[in-house]
Image (cartoon, rainbow, N blue to C red; front, side, top):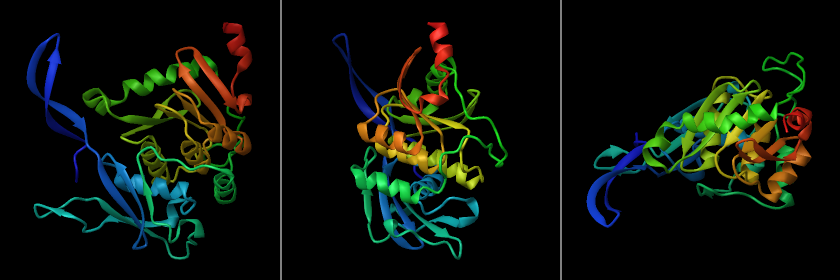
Amino acid sequence: MGRVTERRKVIRIRDGAVSARPDTLVAEEPLEIRLNGKPLAITMRTPGDDFALAAGFLVSEGVLGTADELQNIVYCAGAMVDGSNTYNIVDVKTAPGVVIPDITLERNVYTTSSCGLCGKASLDAVRTTARWPIDDTHDAHGGEAPPVRLDPALLAQLPDRLRAAQRVFDRTGGLHAAALFSEDGELLDIREDVGRHNAVDKLVGRALQNGALPLSRAVLLVSGRASFELAQKAVMAGIPVLAAVSAPSSLAVDLALESGLTLVGFLRGASMNVYAGEDRIALRAAAAQG
């Protein structure tokens, strides 16, 4: 399987001094995702957690929603390099009887590591295919629970916790990250990838494989901006809160308002902007602290 990092020679210039040295770079390779033997999508990703990535992608496409709908995921014999499998093709086999939504068929998607969708049709597609409506009044086992309510001071701590857990970023400086936190701020899982959407797919895919969907009590934090696609992935996994260290897009805000997702942007230090779902944020606590 491909490595997460690779070494490359670099010419380093510092204060007029020139030297040659090896540098650690994040690996980027294509991954073709097949669904029941049929090519479906190609994404540029950091190798690793490929099965989770594929499963998470199919959650966001409305194909999978529970672990029992997934029969297995296998690597296919793809492009060979020096006689070795590159492990860049995976085939996802659904369980017998799983109905495949038409939106995923015959569309052979090429997905870049920062792609997104746009327009009212995209909002409609999420509305009609969402398996898990956002419902934070129940716990992971379906029992009744109080709605998720987050103290802004707790939210403010999450970016530092995310950054502290980015092991590959420390070596390369070139990776996005996505993390799941509990409503109490506990780090549940973190994934890194060249693409934010891949990192989220890896999180959601692992949750699917572990039978943890919907993630109805979780907070999703992403490095960088909050695009429509990331908001879509949060909604499709039943996640009630999406926070980003940078700005959201207008369509991400539209989707959050329509779906009931709490969307927080520019989460930096004690400052943040709440674009939707402010009922989950303890605003009075923030005002008292101010």
